[in-house]
Image 1: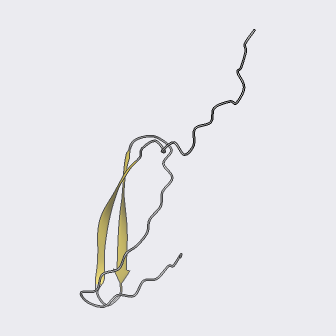
Image 2 (image 1 turned 45 degrees about the vertical axis):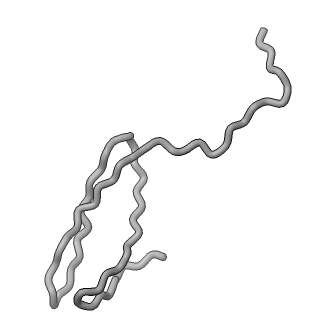
Image 3 (image 1 turned 90 degrees about the vertical axis):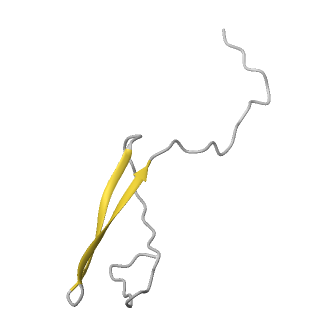
Length: 68
């Protein structure tokens, strides 16, 4: 679910799902800033670690392959 606004009461917690598409195998960092005209603003630092994807399926030929 995608939303631009998130309402929270004092002391309440909510889970936010974040996705990113890395272009290199390295660690990434970003800052998520929350703003409210009555409360002010605060930020969270998000660290992302990229890894190679898991192998989903292994395929082997049913017949022998010959190379000339």
